[in-house]
Amino acid sequence: MSKYCVMASLQFVVPSQWDNLSVEIKDKIIDKLTSSPKMPIWGDLGLGCGVNEQGNSASSLIVRFDNKADMESVFDFLKDRMVKIPVLKGRVSKHICHHDDDSNTPCEIWETYVKE
Image (cartoon, rainbow, N blue to C red; front, side, top):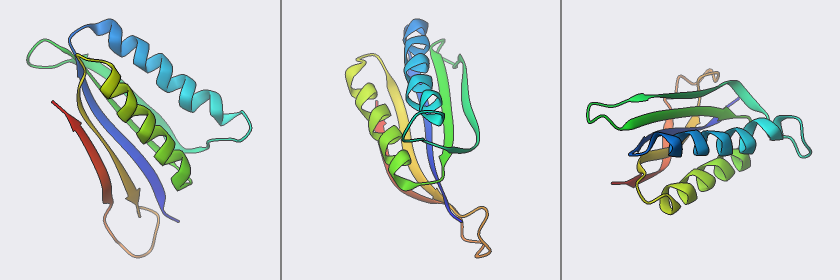
């Protein structure tokens, strides 16, 4: 069965912006794991942060869902936040993953939003 994935790589000038967005991401995803309707994820929610070569806060996200609607919702949410946070730049993309299929088909990138 295919999985639906959102991957993001983001950079911030102000570290607290990642902290704030991280809380929003967790609210968007984790709280819905037990709410109704549920937003089940496949595997772990991967949230990471550090500092890039330019000294800016850098963060990453990878999350896989069982259904397309959840992927679309999180992708649209991140794209919206990237537009509204003026010093944020990066990339968010949505993929269909065939990792568990017998077809040996590689992941397909459906859409990517880049802000520079």
